[in-house]
Structure formats: structure tokens, C-alpha cells
Length: 203
Image (cartoon, rainbow, N blue to C red; front, side, top):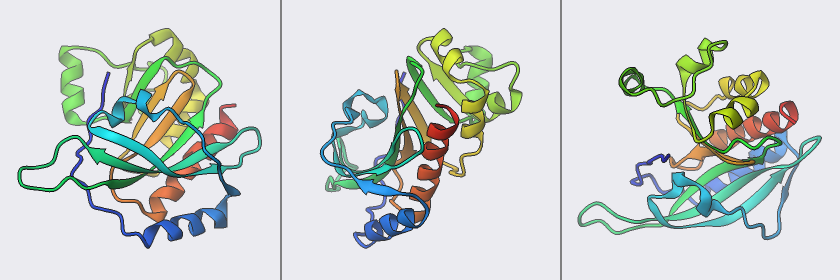
């Protein structure tokens, strides 16, 4: 199971980072963390990068448990011919889940996905939740674990995500969500809203 990102993305202006934090603090109780090893190397979504490091991590304080906003520096493995490899800045949200999901990948479903599914059924569909299955492409390593973890509350939180372009990867109890587009205050807010609601609703 893997997910590929286009690594040729816009470099985030340095002035955007303070705006991201200011915006988040107006809505959430946010605290800078000390050093935490989030084990990002376990996620397949970073496979196109030779190095991914956490430049800053912030706890979003929830009622029962914390979720996190991560600012990362990523170095692509390859660059287009004649182009210099630049470090890219991305923003992600991370949450720890009660259930063990195995390995799961979720993103919005495309027409190509639908065609592939007709030929080689590989994704997990929910017969009782056609809206979710029609909207999202969900690949799993352990169907029973994924079905148990992705209950109605979990699926509803994902249905309400306000980002158009994102990928969710879950490795056992750890979920990460984001994309490799430039960092923005609006995206940070949508990510924080998602993980905060996830931690509150799916505890």
C-alpha cells in the first residue's frame, strides 16, 4: 500500500508560518511541544522524500487527548532534469486513535479509482454507507481491523473534512492527514478542526 505525491510543489513563504500559528491560537488551545519522535518514517506517504524532519510541532488540546499540528521540512529524492532539489515545507495533522486500524490509506475517490475497482476490487466499501464509499477510496491491510475502527462516527468526521485535496494514512493507532501543497493558515485550520473533532468524537 502506498501513496505518491507530486514533489514539485511551491515553497512556502517564511511569513506564512507565524500567520498559521496566530490563526490556530484564535480558535484552539495550542501549545508548542518539546521533542517528540512521531516516527514519520513509518508512513508510505513520505516515500518520495529522502528526508523528512519536524521543524515544529504543536499540541492541539482536546477534552480527552491531544492531537498535533506538524510543520515539516522534506527533501525530495529526485528533481526534474536541470532543477535544484530544494527543501519543501509542509503541514500535517496527527492524532492517536483508540482502535488499531492496521494500515489504511484514505483519499477522495477519482474516476480512475472507480474504473480500477470494476476490474480489480481492492478497496474497502461500506454497504451501509454508500455516500462514504462513493466519495472516498480506502485501502486497508486488515479488513476486520479497518471495519472495526472505521465506525459511523469515524466516517462522518471524514465526510466533513473541508479540504479538497488530502490523504489520510493510518498505521495501527497513528493517523496523519495533509498534502504537499504550500502551507497556509486556511489549510492549518481545516487540519486542526479535523483532528480535534476526531479526538473528541471517536474517543
